Image (tube, helix red, strand yellow):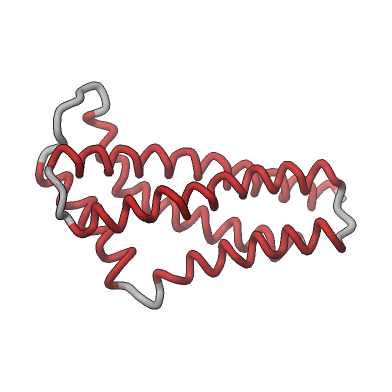
Length: 154
Protein backbone atom coordinates (compact mmCIF):
# COMPACT_ATOMS: atom_id res chain seq x y z
CA UNK A 1 0.00 0.00 0.00
CA UNK A 2 2.84 2.41 0.81
CA UNK A 3 4.14 2.53 -2.80
CA UNK A 4 0.70 3.50 -4.13
CA UNK A 5 0.20 6.14 -1.44
CA UNK A 6 3.64 7.67 -1.94
CA UNK A 7 3.25 7.63 -5.73
CA UNK A 8 -0.06 9.49 -5.49
CA UNK A 9 1.39 11.91 -2.94
CA UNK A 10 4.46 12.49 -5.10
CA UNK A 11 2.32 13.18 -8.15
CA UNK A 12 0.18 15.68 -6.23
CA UNK A 13 3.28 17.37 -4.82
CA UNK A 14 4.65 17.74 -8.36
CA UNK A 15 1.37 19.30 -9.53
CA UNK A 16 1.41 21.69 -6.58
CA UNK A 17 4.99 22.64 -7.44
CA UNK A 18 3.93 23.53 -10.97
CA UNK A 19 1.01 25.58 -9.63
CA UNK A 20 3.27 27.39 -7.19
CA UNK A 21 5.63 28.39 -10.00
CA UNK A 22 2.84 30.76 -11.07
CA UNK A 23 1.23 31.40 -7.68
CA UNK A 24 4.34 32.79 -5.99
CA UNK A 25 4.18 35.86 -8.22
CA UNK A 26 1.64 37.25 -5.75
CA UNK A 27 4.12 37.04 -2.86
CA UNK A 28 6.13 39.99 -4.18
CA UNK A 29 3.01 42.10 -3.54
CA UNK A 30 1.97 40.56 -0.21
CA UNK A 31 2.66 43.69 1.83
CA UNK A 32 0.20 45.76 -0.16
CA UNK A 33 -3.53 45.47 -0.62
CA UNK A 34 -3.29 47.00 -4.09
CA UNK A 35 -4.34 45.11 -7.18
CA UNK A 36 -1.71 42.90 -8.75
CA UNK A 37 -0.12 44.30 -11.91
CA UNK A 38 -1.79 43.18 -15.14
CA UNK A 39 1.20 41.11 -16.34
CA UNK A 40 1.09 39.11 -13.08
CA UNK A 41 -2.66 38.56 -13.31
CA UNK A 42 -2.36 37.61 -16.98
CA UNK A 43 0.37 35.09 -16.24
CA UNK A 44 -1.47 33.40 -13.37
CA UNK A 45 -4.87 33.51 -15.05
CA UNK A 46 -3.45 32.17 -18.32
CA UNK A 47 -1.92 29.22 -16.49
CA UNK A 48 -5.14 28.39 -14.67
CA UNK A 49 -7.20 28.72 -17.83
CA UNK A 50 -4.95 26.15 -19.45
CA UNK A 51 -4.68 23.90 -16.38
CA UNK A 52 -8.38 23.81 -15.54
CA UNK A 53 -10.21 24.30 -18.82
CA UNK A 54 -8.36 23.79 -22.07
CA UNK A 55 -6.21 20.84 -21.03
CA UNK A 56 -9.11 18.40 -20.65
CA UNK A 57 -9.02 15.43 -20.30
CA UNK A 58 -5.58 15.80 -18.69
CA UNK A 59 -6.89 18.24 -16.08
CA UNK A 60 -9.09 15.44 -14.75
CA UNK A 61 -6.01 13.35 -13.96
CA UNK A 62 -5.35 15.35 -10.79
CA UNK A 63 -8.87 14.61 -9.51
CA UNK A 64 -8.42 10.94 -10.40
CA UNK A 65 -5.16 10.72 -8.45
CA UNK A 66 -6.80 12.42 -5.47
CA UNK A 67 -9.65 9.89 -5.61
CA UNK A 68 -7.20 6.99 -5.83
CA UNK A 69 -5.27 8.35 -2.84
CA UNK A 70 -8.39 8.80 -0.71
CA UNK A 71 -9.67 5.38 -1.78
CA UNK A 72 -6.35 3.72 -0.98
CA UNK A 73 -6.33 5.34 2.45
CA UNK A 74 -9.89 4.15 3.09
CA UNK A 75 -8.93 0.65 1.97
CA UNK A 76 -5.87 0.70 4.25
CA UNK A 77 -8.01 1.85 7.15
CA UNK A 78 -10.31 -1.15 6.70
CA UNK A 79 -7.91 -3.84 5.50
CA UNK A 80 -4.36 -2.60 5.97
CA UNK A 81 -1.87 -3.58 8.60
CA UNK A 82 -0.75 0.01 9.19
CA UNK A 83 -1.06 1.56 12.64
CA UNK A 84 -4.17 3.60 13.41
CA UNK A 85 -2.22 6.75 14.22
CA UNK A 86 -0.58 6.66 10.78
CA UNK A 87 -3.88 6.30 8.97
CA UNK A 88 -5.56 8.97 11.09
CA UNK A 89 -2.71 11.43 10.49
CA UNK A 90 -2.76 10.56 6.79
CA UNK A 91 -6.49 11.18 6.59
CA UNK A 92 -6.02 14.68 8.01
CA UNK A 93 -2.92 15.49 5.95
CA UNK A 94 -4.61 14.37 2.72
CA UNK A 95 -8.19 15.26 3.59
CA UNK A 96 -7.51 18.95 4.11
CA UNK A 97 -5.80 19.50 0.73
CA UNK A 98 -8.28 17.35 -1.19
CA UNK A 99 -11.27 19.01 0.46
CA UNK A 100 -9.81 22.49 0.01
CA UNK A 101 -9.12 21.78 -3.67
CA UNK A 102 -12.64 20.51 -4.25
CA UNK A 103 -14.58 23.28 -2.54
CA UNK A 104 -12.34 26.31 -2.94
CA UNK A 105 -9.11 26.15 -4.94
CA UNK A 106 -10.35 24.61 -8.18
CA UNK A 107 -13.49 26.80 -8.40
CA UNK A 108 -11.33 29.89 -7.77
CA UNK A 109 -8.80 28.78 -10.39
CA UNK A 110 -11.51 28.17 -12.99
CA UNK A 111 -13.01 31.57 -12.27
CA UNK A 112 -9.63 33.33 -12.40
CA UNK A 113 -8.84 31.56 -15.66
CA UNK A 114 -11.98 33.00 -17.24
CA UNK A 115 -10.88 36.57 -16.38
CA UNK A 116 -14.45 37.85 -16.16
CA UNK A 117 -14.03 39.58 -12.80
CA UNK A 118 -12.62 42.99 -11.98
CA UNK A 119 -8.85 43.28 -11.43
CA UNK A 120 -9.50 43.60 -7.69
CA UNK A 121 -11.47 40.34 -7.63
CA UNK A 122 -8.88 38.60 -9.80
CA UNK A 123 -6.23 39.76 -7.33
CA UNK A 124 -8.25 38.31 -4.46
CA UNK A 125 -8.65 35.01 -6.31
CA UNK A 126 -4.94 34.79 -7.17
CA UNK A 127 -3.95 35.44 -3.55
CA UNK A 128 -6.48 32.90 -2.25
CA UNK A 129 -5.23 30.26 -4.68
CA UNK A 130 -1.64 30.87 -3.59
CA UNK A 131 -2.59 30.53 0.10
CA UNK A 132 -4.52 27.34 -0.64
CA UNK A 133 -1.62 25.85 -2.55
CA UNK A 134 0.85 26.67 0.22
CA UNK A 135 -1.43 24.91 2.74
CA UNK A 136 -1.90 21.95 0.39
CA UNK A 137 1.83 21.68 -0.24
CA UNK A 138 2.48 21.51 3.50
CA UNK A 139 -0.12 18.79 3.98
CA UNK A 140 0.98 16.64 1.05
CA UNK A 141 4.67 17.06 1.89
CA UNK A 142 4.03 16.05 5.52
CA UNK A 143 1.99 13.06 4.29
CA UNK A 144 4.83 11.96 2.02
CA UNK A 145 7.46 12.36 4.72
CA UNK A 146 5.30 10.40 7.14
CA UNK A 147 4.85 7.47 4.75
CA UNK A 148 8.45 7.47 3.58
CA UNK A 149 9.67 7.47 7.18
CA UNK A 150 7.23 4.71 8.11
CA UNK A 151 8.23 2.62 5.08
CA UNK A 152 11.96 2.98 5.76
CA UNK A 153 11.54 2.15 9.46
CA UNK A 154 9.77 -1.16 8.76
